[in-house]
Length: 180
Ligand code: ATP
Ligand code: MG
Image 1 (cartoon, rainbow, N blue to C red):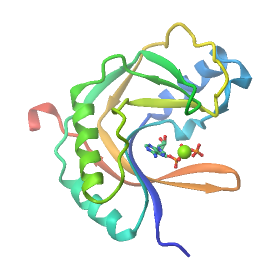
Image 2 (image 1 turned 90 degrees about the horizontal axis):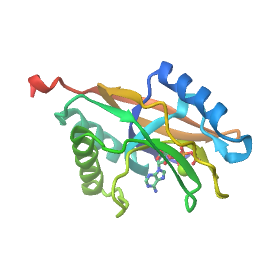
Image 3 (image 1 turned 120 degrees about the vertical axis):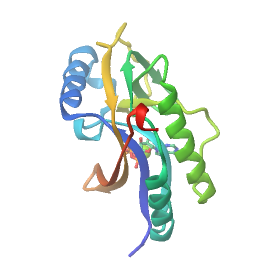
Image 4 (image 1 turned 45 degrees about the horizontal axis):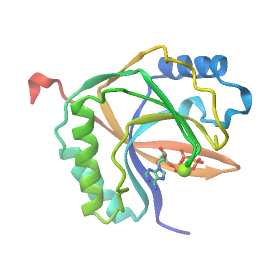
């Protein structure tokens, strides 16, 4: 049995927002758009760690617990399709600085612990569909949901019986701006 686990840091979406996004997706996209991401799996990846040892995971859990990052809110007011990776996504036209800083510090800790980080710029997004490789008619706008981020988490991704599941391993609160 392998001791390595597939881990990533991410922001979750509150259950109410998950439901709203799923309902809107069903109304706005044709059924053959791609493979819809399950409601419970909607998230914004901050840093992907890959398949890592328990030792590396423990080191990253320690550093994550020392990060002092600020709460923020963001409007999910952008939408797009990356045909290369087959992802249809929603995101923010202007990502808040606090989000960019949190992702940057997590990604640099990940890199220092030997987790390869993509050279592509960080583009915070919630994947709605995967395997969307054909042209997609993108709705003109999202309902401009507001995502209030007051914590970030470490997730394990597993693939069982044809389904990807995420398990939240740890969550760390984000601080009020006045507390930093
Ligand atoms: P599936 O692989 O079944 O389509 P998934 O992509 O959500 O589902 P994972 O591949 O375990 O599941 O990925 C977990 C998260 O990490 C997702 O947000 C995914 O986009 C992101 N991710 C996966 N691989 C990489 C990578 N090489 N670089 C950056 N982010 C990645
Ligand atoms: Mg994947």
